[in-house]
Amino acid sequence: MSPSQLGRLERGVIRRPTLEQLSRAARSVGHKPWFALYPTGAPVRDAPQLALLARFERLLAPPLRLQREVALPIPGDLRAWDGRITHDGRTASIEGISRLDDVQEVTRRIELKVRDDPEAGAVILVLNRTAHNRHILAAHREALRVGLPLDGAAIARELRNGRIPRAGGVILL
Image 1 (cartoon, rainbow, N blue to C red):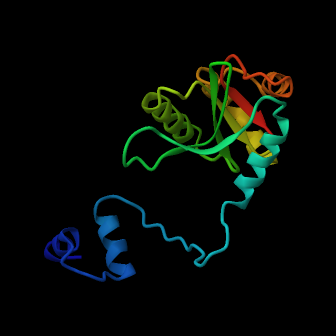
Image 2 (image 1 turned 120 degrees about the horizontal axis):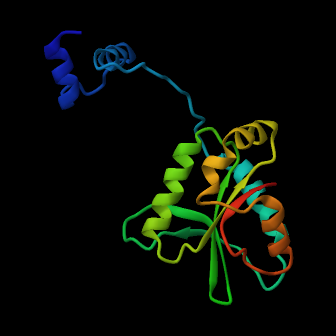
């Protein structure tokens, strides 16, 4: 790719670049091109996460109740917690992940939400109980323990007794 063509691509002069042009441009700046296909249309693509949150919700004993999709209190910010439990002046914010692939990314995302949401309280990371997630968690649990110290049994015990856990943690469901 010539420098002038790369410049036109960077400035957006080339309105409909080809996949080859984009690949060449990516390689020229040291990136490996990656191509992915995503389904279109109306089907729900977050069904595994919705099922995960439903399993979590079944752990909650009264008076606890899950509020879903709690937006961060910043106008125009599109981020949200997957859920929130509030009772007796205590709060737990819920982050549900069906497939854990990047522990550092998840940790950063949670830390940023906590930083930007003064009402976040304890954070509970809810993961699908899959062989993949168990393997990742076994290898990286200590990296998560600083911000999410409680393990699943302690979290489940508190929730089944109608109490919000004293700290954040990770639970596999």
